[in-house]
Image 1 (cartoon, rainbow, N blue to C red):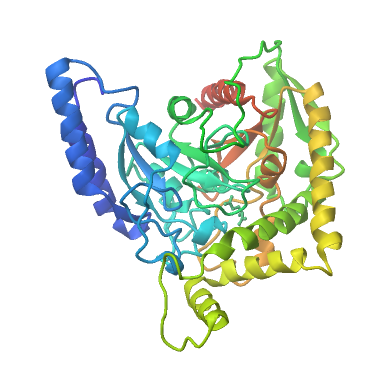
Image 2 (cartoon, rainbow, N blue to C red; image 1 turned 180 degrees about the vertical axis):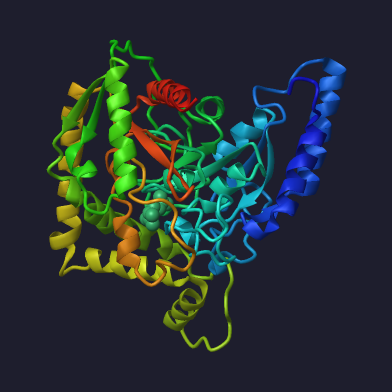
Length: 464
Ligand code: GLN
């Protein structure tokens, strides 16, 4: 805050924006009274001391409905968690509040973060602010739509296979998934624990970097975190950038997206960057490998939702423990979540474990090995974020496989732990935005954000 706008004014502004564009359905709930009272406290403290209450003083943040905020409802956009209130706050929430941020509400998403269109939500779909007939992407669709519609300054989403970057691409904003182990998952509802990361959706890389510096870093409650702080590696200039031949030659890639991508590569070369086309023979295995492993992890993670300890529970017609599980889970979970639990239990079942689960684990190891080779050669890798721009609401609901396959560019960083960002680079002739994805080697998040900023400036100058 520069002293011209008070925190109270800022919160009023965003609440009004949310109200005005209610039809987008980006929010499950706003915390209006609490946000206003915190804003007032921040304003008063600034008035008396002349000092800001932390590096995020008055920054208005929205959180996806999978992140715990003590005393507030939390549902993962699922009926099975109806009425549940968080009994503790996620580490990211604690860190935001400690630096003076204001959490204005929780945002709509796909149920348990499973999906790519935000149509799998118990609260109904979110509309894309750019074109209301289109989906905003998913699973963090509400978080991306809210930033695009100016309903908060920045959002926290979660990204297991693209759920921050893909909606950012569809809505024309910036979405960042850090390296696995950079941001604590304590207080995040788990979908596939070895893939999940909390990510940030914002208007630009600078805002994202500011928030990232506050919420990232070791946490005693999550032992999968990388103990070391980010180191800024000396980057040799000119920067060497790679892209995958198989990604750019993929038949599902929209022709215009491909052309814009190739034109940008020409521009990079003109600007003196070294650009190399990389061979990635395993490219076609990334989506199957992702869906075998994430459904397996999901089946295990979601077994705790039984309606006994928390969430909605139907006491009628229950004759024994099995019927209690069956009734609560049948009523509580939506179709997509059930599909994934069934797939996960299938790949983990005694007869198929080796054929699917073990094999996918092996593929994941190969991908990690290959990734080290790629980054011995280049500093970052670029690709389109999604093979097509936002599709129509209801268009793909009946074809889950088609939706799964469209994750071909976003799941690779989650399989290998890379940091990745989607930048709002391009506009399609149908006026929809689409993004450029940038990836760096694991734990190289700050360099990724710096490169992203550099390329974003280059693209902005090119457009002007
Ligand atoms: N679309 C992917 C899926 O449904 C990604 C989800 C996510 O990143 N949470 O699994």
